[in-house]
Image (cartoon, rainbow, N blue to C red; front, side, top):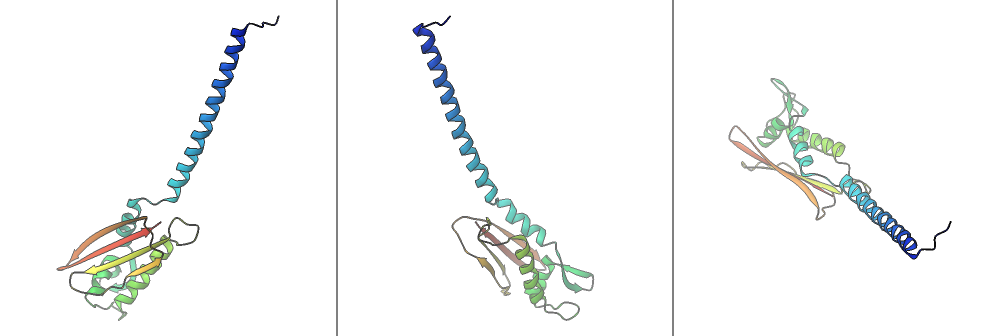
Amino acid sequence: MKSNNPKNRKGQEEMVGFALIIIFVSVIILVFLGFSLNKNRQSLESYEAESFIISSLQYSTECKDYYGYVSLNDLIFMCNSDTKCRDGSDSCNILNSTLNGLLNQSWRVTENSPVKGYELNIVSNTGGVIPEIMVGNKTRNSQGTLQTFSKGGASVNITFSVFN
């Protein structure tokens, strides 16, 4: 038996309306969730630049001293004081090539990547000149770090910024 009771029909219309609202809100939540996940995947975190610098300073370079291969940290101070490697190689040339190699492998600057550019500055309190490395474009959105290291009375500030 079919009921033509207006109360039943009104209740069914309200349930259909409620279901449509739930579906509509769910779609909106999924769209916002999709945008937020996509955005987070494409952005850089501040700890990434700091971790890169700290770990890079422990990297063993081609330069040797009397104890063996020199870390990047020690090579910076060797370049700052114009000390040559044990085989007579220029420590600043090795520093520059090592830094460029590490940066190019770790922070690929391409059109579709989240990294649009990076800049590395090493400044010494003794006036030693260590070349600045700049690749790509500077943007308003960046993550960076400043690390200060000392050795034998010399102090070095390393500033690294990644632009996205």
